[in-house]
Length: 534
Ligand code: SF4
Image (tube, rainbow, N blue to C red):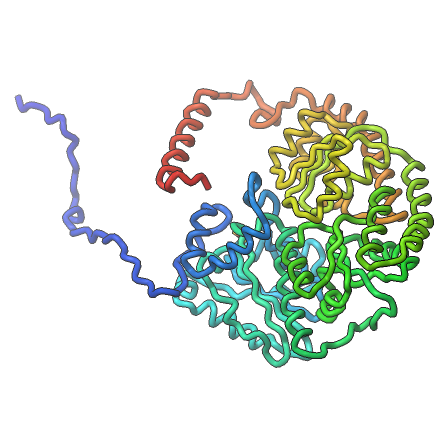
């Protein structure tokens, strides 16, 4: 009897298996110095930020990345946890009259950004210069961008064209600085807004505002510039830094009038000529404190910056005094303005007091101002989280809040915000979408910061009474939240949510094994990355 061979046998039907297989060779990087680094469409939010940053530095973007690291300090929240940061700068460009916006980035990023822009009513086309690996690596993408701006540069339609490099073109070093400064009298502004260098969409607004102010400042230095369409104010003005509810600049103007001053333009501006008037104001109010690049331009123009904002009783009193001081206004005039507005603010704050505890978090940069208003309205606010960084312009608000026992967390992560809400169990949670979702799951009445809170007047007498109604109405929903929680009790949650015919087949052992595998893979990745985590 023939012994059975215990080796597996391969059954062949033809000689295909004998074909010689061509093996690849290790790639040698032969790209000439200064050529764009390779980075295909496979890079994006999902690729390691460190990898993207390394590519960008190799491609000659070190200077701008170092500037961003200085302007927008990172950690512990070091990468976007909300929407793509470039949405901030895109929105600023789209809101300006006679300004065209062109994106250079992966199609998926551009799809998301244009979708969100139109969701928020952009009513304007977003330009896009597509690319593929070849055009990116050979430098053809840059030529395509240059051709596109030449084609678009019609002075009859545009004052400026803003070109934005998203993550992949930034990582690949597409050199927007080599675009002409102006074509046919149309200004060309090129900016890099990578998710691995600009942590929030709030700070991306600053990237574009700063770049435009820098351009406008050089124009002013070079000679006479156009007057604003609305004419020049007959009184000295205060430029307002930060997007705010449209009625707020009017309210601020009313409070400045007794000081002999007027409200200047709001930066980010709505048209190019406003940039000149903004630079023309001797005093700039950093209502939103994270506009580091814009402040740098104002300081280069010799302007005085005043932090915080006229919110609530104490905030308005201190802000009017600081503005008066910066402009050298007679203290008696300042006192008269304070006497004219503070009683009305106090009355509005006391008219419908807020009773209850609130945790507050957001990424707009105005979180501290809202917290001040809520506290002066009677609320107990133990925690305020902002995705934006701490700057010297937020110092007066931090000081005021901390003196009232508030824990203020800058660069707060989603995990920080949720942990605070879960630990405090407030009567109301104000936060970003995932915080609100979590709050509702816990039966805590919750409000979206962006849609429901920051879209209201906050300044002066008008702002003093604007939050109470919405906050009190939401707090009054506690019974409804409890009812809903009771109604849905027992339907399961997480991976057991829904209707099951039998008991859900939970396999915690599979989950534990998988978790171990993931941890092992992560350790190997960090080791291969030279011990660097991200
Ligand atoms: S551009 Fe925005 S969406 Fe695209 S990879 Fe970067 S952060 Fe993500």
